[in-house]
Length: 462
Ligand code: GLY
Ligand code: MN
Ligand code: MN
Image: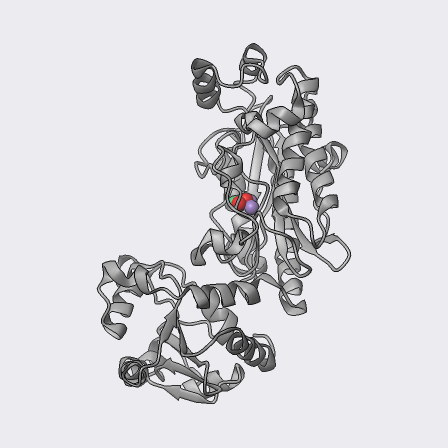
């Protein structure tokens, strides 16, 4: 846990951002897998962690915006609980660790809120994302589950996004720890990428590293010799010479901060000429876009820079043709990179996505594009010092997409379909790093993970 002043300060700053009323944060509960006592790994809600820090189930927290008072709702354990879980601190002791003086049992929450609502006070809450949250909000506030969404507080969302977007030194330290665990996961994956190995042997090994060094993985591991499928969670293929393995994996620290790293490794440890040609284009996009990151620049412009580098590289190889800037303006490059350049990171690997992607990545000056490809950009707005984000360009040859666009005759002045079709057996490449925006520019977080052709080939030998 961070020092208690960190949590007190966050709650006070939230008060400063908000007009009036009560901000209600509902923690997560245990979620059963196949019967009630057999639960999924427990994961606390990230905003609850951010403001109240307590990492167990059946909790809520209220920040009284007008009265400088915070309350944690939660139950002390019973003797039964102690028998099964061992001794536990009291709620008072737990609350004290995050600077909260007032605690009440969970079953007092509805009564408390109703009394305040009766006085004409507003209860602000964030968008629910678990079925149980909807039911809790119904029970607490008397809202029909299908109307809950109409009462979400945009004011609270905006205040929380404003605070959580700027990472403090403790958070940056945590994310760096998560990247350092990812270093071990990714270098291990590179060494294991030999013909005959089944993907799940590697995926399982690196998931074990995350668990052994920190916590669970920060999202289900993406590891595949079919890297052209962007989020490929199938791990049953056998690695074969001539293919590349895309590994997109990160760890969560015990404080629940995430890393999110992608590397692409040639099976057997040596890139072919054709692989190297495409790899160098994606690497250039990764490195030059990282280099472009600084406060004041719009991330959409960095995304478009990646698109230009990709289109220009593919034109040099004869896969694209014509005017690069115009091809990118019209969105032709998205055949090969149908995703955005990156997203915020922190307590959530796609940080705050549950609060609404547009609140996190867009603002009044930056509206979401409706063009295929750029429309999927999660972060578009101007960068500020303290943001942590990913830079993750890729190049993919997706047979179904190539077939469709060719059939529809899309962008024939920019895409050489005959040439693109030669790459239908190629797979995909993505290179992803986690980047902190500093006052003057950027810092790539964590111990550098092999990334150049030479570095990867050298690591594979190990
Ligand atoms: N790990 C999913 C992503 O890179 O966004
Ligand atoms: Mn990733
Ligand atoms: Mn990512």
